[in-house]
Image (cartoon, rainbow over all chains, first blue to last red; front, side, top):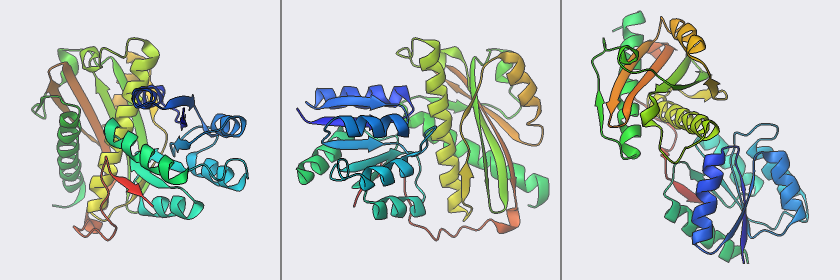
Length: 123
Length: 173
């Protein structure tokens, strides 16, 4: 089963996305900040990592940099799921190697479709 | 319109637009109440959180409060209800940012802070003396939004030099 790591400090978002992914046949694991997300990404094999930008302890952009700097996690596609929409941040994430940027709130079926598309392209 | 009156008019217009759009996006039927309406008089605001922001020519604070009936039933624990109001404040802040950007004003927001008790809420509400407060009626109860916005109205233009992004956008690189 393809597995997605959801890194978001909002339990509501993690639960909502996990439920939608489970219904679409994906496995889903949650992490509540960048440090927990990085540890989880290194310990298991994921088809895709979904991360928020504003999180305590370690934010999403720093997490993205660390994931892309680690040979174990760098091949895993990363999608940013955030309320932020500043062009400079979007371009920063693109340059750092993110596969896409999704602005919350988003319809779950569209999010799952985007995850499926990106995970398929990376496999 | 300049000075304090201009700032208040700008803040009022932003609040009405973004709150109505936001509540409608959640499937709620919403009616703006008269500017003089105090929702607290008829219904206690049980959940509240606030976020500060600043940018070129603009500083401020946004606070969202709502009655218990507005929170979705699936948020059945205090932790989930707090998480919900915090998420909503973040969403509303994003809409305010987006609206300000259309004026050519870019702002950065800080972390959303929860307000836990009524005494703290009433104390902090007093600090919004320079801001504007608008209340809205929904099927679940009342929602109050306070926006303390100090903005250089002279700087406000309709120009938007950056690409327009909106909620729900999926940008694949």
